[in-house]
Image (cartoon, rainbow, N blue to C red; front, side, top):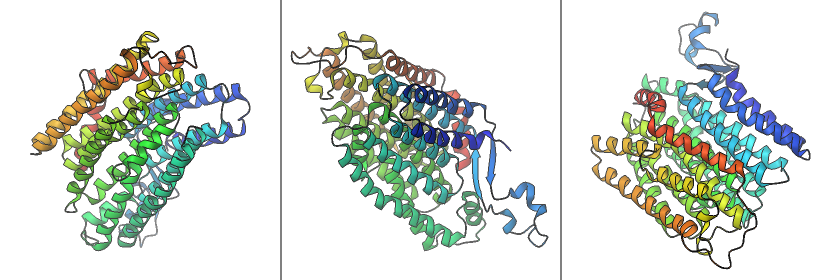
Length: 493
């Protein structure tokens, strides 16, 4: 038994409880939170690949210990408990999410003198639930962990104490009261049709024709789960509320929230592909929502004058590239989607924290009121510009490699128009970002611009630098992750 697998979930849960109890002891909370933040990516690296069973049985190892009348039957092949599966793909995403969470928490401590126990509680609970969601091999527990993640996202917005944050949190909660139950209802249809919520069991039952693959229960279940997936990821029609969520959290909180959304999208996307990819129209439905996300979000970002809203819309638009990879449905396109998801976690976190430092200095995110900041901190300005290049897919950064893989996959699959669209959207992203960068850093400094803080904390600069180095490393040495993503994608086809 690999005890490090459940520890990736247990440790942040315990940390959430402890920091909430010790909320008034700032030094203790800071030290403890930093240690826990470092522990998550370290455990992800050290943990061995394996399967963790909670209350069920391993059919491959324990079938012979079952009653004799059950050995060799279908019942012996079913897992009756919760199952965590940890492979190299989970290792990569948990490591990256852990790094982002650590740097975001570290940045929060340097920008806020008083530590909020509830705010840290929500971050750690969200981290635990999204890791559990990624590890889970049954769709009911995935739903449970998603709901916890969604609630922590609402809580992080409220605890951020920004303007209009309560309104956005309430709107997101109301929409969640629609998206969440739809997802649960879809799980119920699958359970009623198959008799199990374990993904391995569902695939086994469908592939061996124990149930009609085109039964109304499975088709309706797919439609409902797809709707819940759109909500969890922030794809249309939920793109505007998701972007508002990012813009109303603290910058360090936005970095974490985006990571949560990417992992929710990834976990349910993989589960849907495993279970429902055979259904006619599956790929078409995914492609349609991917195109809508790319076009609508990028168009709205181009019209924004608030850089927090701009980055938020760009982040949602980038999710469209991930969905597009799943929709095309080839080994290379799915590998590109996985690579794009990994990049999205790192790049958008870097931009949220980087542009957040501008808000920290000036207490405004209106690009019309800013200018001349390249002279205040040229290093941060250069790193933000390079982060924008990574987001747009400019070489030699990681965004270039994943988007190039996606374009090549689209061309190989005969989707020339999708390849062209991906290139056009990337170009628009680049010009949108450069326009905002020019307004903030290169235009003359307004006479009425006042600074509420004298300089950007060194920890913030360090955090952005670390994330930029990761972007460059994955761009120069993409095989670090593609050697994992490509075989995994091949196993899904």
